[in-house]
Length: 263
Image (cartoon, rainbow, N blue to C red; front, side, top):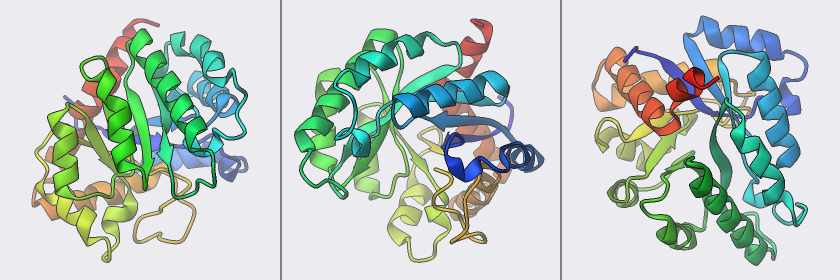
C-alpha cells in the first residue's frame, strides 16, 4: 500500500470553493493529497459531488441526506438517491445520521431518512458515512439491525476511547478532523493516541474545522496534512507509517480500486 494522503470527507461542491476550486485542488496535490471524497448533503449536493468526481480523477463522491436537511427534504429524496449509487465513482452513502444539537422538532423525520439510507447502502453493497451529534444512543440503536450488512465510519469523531472501542467491536470505524490539532480538544487527542492502526481515517470536513495553523479560516483538503502530522506526533509514529495505515483503511472501507477497475 502506498503512503497516500487521503481526505475522506470534504464538501468541495459548497459555494465556499466556487471562486477558486481549481486552485484549491492544486494546493491539495502540492500538499501530497491524492484522493478526496466529496460528500453529498442532499440530492442536489450529491449530484454536484458526482459531477466533480467526473471532472477530476482525484475526487470520489458519497451521496446522502444530512440529518439537518431532513426537515426540508422531499419525501422521495432517498429514492432519488438510488440511481446515483450505480455511478462508478460513488464510494459510500452519506453523510447521513442523527443531529439533535441543531434539531428543533424533526427527530422522527431524521430517523426515517437515516433508516432509508441505511437500507439503500445495504442493498447496494456500500458502507455509510455517519454524522452523529448529541444523538449517540439513538444512532447506535439505528445501526443494530444492519450489523453484518454494512459498515459505518463516524466522521468528525470527537468522543472518548471507550465509545470508539465500542464502534470498533461492531466493525465500524472513525475519522478525525483538524480538531485533533486544537490544544483544548484533549478527549479526542487522547482517543486518537490510543486507537490501533487500521481503525481510523483522516478528513478535513472542509470548509469547516480548519486545523492549526489555519484555525478560524476556511478549511480545504490540503490542510489534511496538518491533521496527519499532528496525529503521527500524538501516536509517536512516523508520518509515513500513519499514511500507509490510514490509506489502507480507506481502501478497505471505500474500495477505490474496485471502483477504478469497474469503470
